[in-house]
Image (cartoon, rainbow, N blue to C red; front, side, top):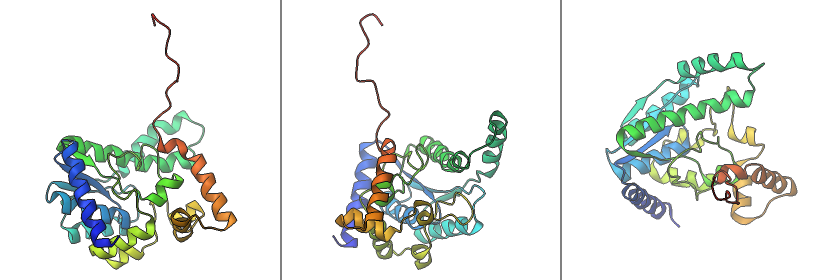
Length: 246
């Protein structure tokens, strides 16, 4: 499928999701990266002015917030910035005294979960749906935070691997610097997606699309799939029913 056709079908799909949900538009978090930029463009095309981009720095690199605002200006999407740094600090100040030490994972995952709260505040306020920015490559291996960036209403890029997102971004006119920027969740200084996963997107995409990969890549991907299976399903419910009278 050509990028032009994919873009048009995604715009129509977004319009259908908004109508089906009885919503007035879409809200998307802009990180300064390629995935959120693509979703912002699609949201703008689908809903016009009835969409909102949120830039939510949380002790992030200033360059990322600047890139996010640049994308918003390029796209022409309504945009607001909410600095989550003070909220993050206040929360850690409240809970850190309750534990011996705060694990790096708990500290890092707090950021996307605060962003999820912010997105849903505005979504509830405006009667919008939250459009997530996760792509197929990330979803397949669980490279997202449960109830963080995974806490969304719809995932328009959920069927596209990273390479396909790049092709779509080029068609949509996303600035080249955003397209070639090393993907990062911005969880800590110098953090990158590929460094954290221990996989390149090229290898991951090839395996997902063709099933072809070297033994090390295949084993890595399948292990990540197994470990993250709980992220892709609803919380388990007991299969048995309670006895009568309870």
